[in-house]
Picture 1: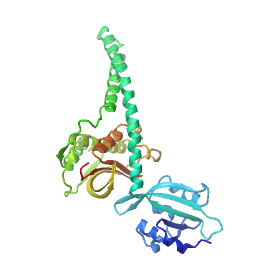
Picture 2: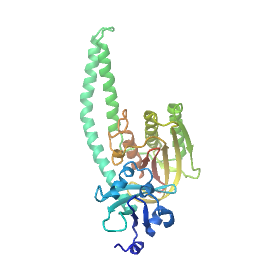
Picture 3: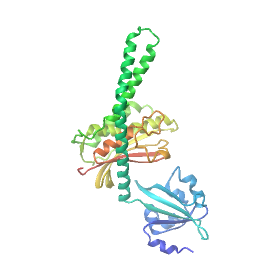
Length: 352
């Protein structure tokens, strides 16, 4: 028989579940992690504590009954307006009054920093490989375009083959633009100018309104107390525009949202984990939409180059946004579930 009183001595949240997946016991750490009293937790469905997790929810009861053995999963817990990353372990029990033990450990700043640093290393290697490949492709692509132009010049103005030479030239130009985007982002030449983050938000808001106002309700929610920053406004405009346009295009392309909405929001954040270190204060610029969300299988690689969940996407927008923000010592992170996706561009208020 488990001695459940000893669980109150643990810093890790522990919850015991019955065969229906309902909470029958929660230790003190679980109360603190979820911001709920033991009385509020008792009787609740364990899966409901983690919101609408598309991967966890349908598997939860099977996991309680031992179908998957020990289930391990990284999750996000909502605390007030914050999203807290955590690690979940669900262990089926035999010969006990309870059907399963649920252990949840909030990831501390060191865990978050390790993940951010690992992502930065992965992206750096991938970008360098892609840039080397792009340089190799650029010269022969120019030759293809030049040959198509020469062939077109030899054809009469009304010749039917001109249609095909025009396609070759147009596609070569499109690929050259894609390659230029792969090669262009370099930290060298990064300017350090004073600017207000809301100037960047307003620029992006204006561009979004011009492109999507007929299809999406776009609004702003700014914190006027955010102080000025120092950095490269042009790159941060591009970063935020990439994030916001990606969200808007996903809303439009899904076609499944009755009243598509997108919000640009700014806040002061405290005790944040950024690209290379924790900081006391930073600026959090959020792009929030009510679309279908990021597919679960893309959560771990959404910022990798050429990875996209959209049929017409190139997979470069979010990768470039992450690169530009990391050049400023910041990071782009996100939470996503059906009906609510929030990408956060976080920049330090301290010097980098």
